Amino acid sequence: MNLTKTFSAIILAALAAFYATPTFADITNVVETGGDNEATDTITAKWTGVTYNTTIDNEPINGVPAGTPYTVGTFGHLSPAFVDRRHAYTDAPVGTALAGTIQLPADALIPSYLLGGEYIMSGNDNRDNPDYRLDVTVDRPASVFMLIDNRLSDGDGNTPPTFDSTHMQWILDEGWFPLTTGLNRFNNPLIPDEVGIDEDADGSLNQFYSVYFKEVPAGTFTLKQADNSGQNMYGVVVVSQPAPEPGSLALAGLSILGGLGMLRRRSV
Image (cartoon, rainbow, N blue to C red):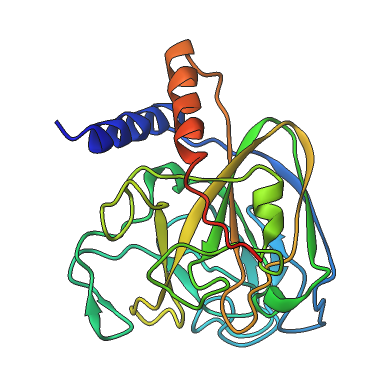
């Protein structure tokens, strides 16, 4: 028996039970500071349930003219990623070409525990703003999932992001863990789960995010700078926590323990 795969399957089953029917985490407010905060294009962050008038043609959805009311939906296949791009999160079945060249060896579907969650659309041009902050308020305990461009620090989109003193060190310092259930294009439970992104919403697959998570109480939590110049801003998905059965809670704890050894860290 492959113990690694068995353990991964147990974690995935726990997540499936815990988040079987995602309910709104009730993001009640998002305050952005340190962003570009332009009148058009890179406007302030929006989140599930918020309606705003688009400010640039074809953003955040191709074919939508400026001035069109748009309501941010829940997270899933083809959900727009940013307020200032038409990039979209995407499912990628086996055989899909990555950037027109490499064929995926396995399905790269959006992990089911993210589907239907609330999420935040920020501006991609904020990816290199050193003082960027999102103060996010939720009215109940929630699991927060950070989607972080694999190319962070080392530019390699085929390996998990590398954190160091100048590249999102706060993820390590503030208790975020990789979620490792094998839901990535390699079916590998030793690396974080992944979410694909279509950078022009044209049916292509261009890059991958790795999934990191943290549990937060009701109230306000803070997300910081992306340190990712020339690449992609992070994404944020929030799923409320149902009251768990004792067994589910124990299995969720196993997932956290299993993630402790998985953060990649570069010494400086």
